[in-house]
Each structure stands twice: as C-alpha cells, then as structure tokens.
Amino acid sequence: MKYGYNTCLFSLDEYARKFHKTYKRPFLFCFHMTNYRFQNYAKRVGIGKIICLARTYKEHAREMNTIVTEDPLLFLKPASSVIFNHGTIIIPHMSQCLHHEVELGVIIGKNGKHIAEEKALQHVLGYLIALDITARDIQSIAKKNGWPWGIAKGFDTFAPLSDAVLKENVPNPQNLDLVLKINGAIKQNANTNQMIYSVERIISFISEIMTLERGDLILTGTPEGVGEIKEGDILEAYLGSLCSLTVDVKHA
Ligand code: MG
Image (cartoon, rainbow, N blue to C red; front, top):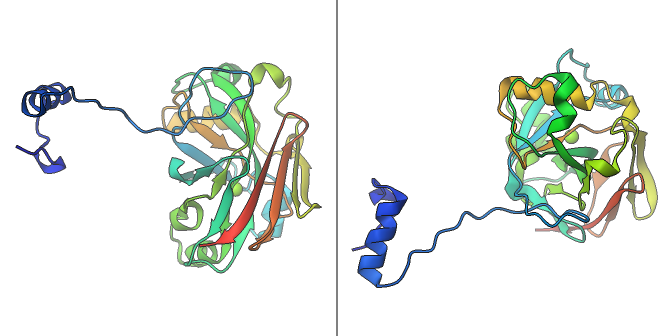
C-alpha cells in the first residue's frame, strides 16, 4: 500500500509504523531547512521566516519618491530565496530590471511575542549583511496597482546572506557601516545610525503582529543608492569589518 499526501489522515507515528510493517525497514523523516553560516558558532540554526522592512532610511524613501510611515512597513521573503557567500543571483525570465538593496540582517535567537523594546536585544542571536534583491520592474507594476510585492521580492537567489556574527561581537547595532560595491565601485554607503526605526523598535513592532521564533531573520531596510545589477556584475557587501558577502549575477 502506498501512502501519498492525499492519504495522510493519520499521525506521523502511525505512518512510520505502517511504513516499517510494509517495507521491513525504519521510516526516516527529516525536515529540510537551510542553516545560517555562523562565524565561531557550532550550533545549527535553521533559517525561518524572513521579515523585511521598507522605507527605513529617509534618503532611500526620497529616491523612491515615497513617504516615510510612522510604523514600519513589512513584507515577507521565502527562505528558499537564500544564497550564501560566493553564490550567484539569477535574473529570472520574468524581469528585465533587478535592483540591489544592501541591508543589516538581524537573526532572532529566542522566541517571543509582545516583546518590549527594552528587552528586544535579548531576543537577538546575531547579525549579518544581506542583499534584498528586487525585481524593480515587477514591483513598480505592483505598486501602481496596489498589489503585494511577493513576486518582486521572492524569486530564488533574491536573498544573498553573509556569514553571521554573534551579537556579543556587535557592541552597538545602531552604529554599523553598510557598504555595497559593484565591480569595485561603491554604490551604497551608509550607517545604521541613519535608520528611522531602531532595531529594538523593529523587533518589538514585528512581535506585536507575529511570534518571532529562533532562526527568523529581519532585513532592516536599505539606505539610498539602490540601482540596477546586470549579468557579469560582482557585488560585494560589507557590515563594517564584521562580515562580508560576494556574489555574482547571471541570467536564468
Ligand atoms: Mg529592502
């Protein structure tokens, strides 16, 4: 007897027992999860939901001809969009214009709901430098029509992540240099002290909406200087001297 997804009306234990009885071997089950790559931290931490912020730097809001809002604007990226250092961003057939957005990433280490700002940093495990790759042409159409940004932000390879650093190595997340170079030329260069919302406020705000869980990643928004990337480009992103990321770009 075969057990497809449409026949899974019993528990995993029961499935395992029937599998063993039928095939005379143990049923092995594991959840596939991509793990962070930490510097000097041996424990495995799977990448959970990726919560992204928009318009968290005034100058970026200005260059996009949009306004800054009182509360942060959120959207989600799938964990399947993650690539790591020395990976390749793939330009999908559906888009003619990808943009780079360099951002501070905050990794959650402890579950929490309704987290007070004063306790927010207790929930942080570490930090990394990330790129929130955006299909700007698709996003522009979505904005005009009031549609969500899931397509523009969610393609595979649209979330390059550096190795992560533990928070103990980051005395002040609100004073970190963010730099993005393309083919050696600096395109974005800012400091997290220019963010409109603090990391504490962001964590507290998100936790009022959804439970933050160990392994979740918050991409805290990009400063000004976003622009197009093309096939053959080499992108280098830096979080001060703490960590860095190098990726290239190819067509699908
Ligand atoms: Mg962004």
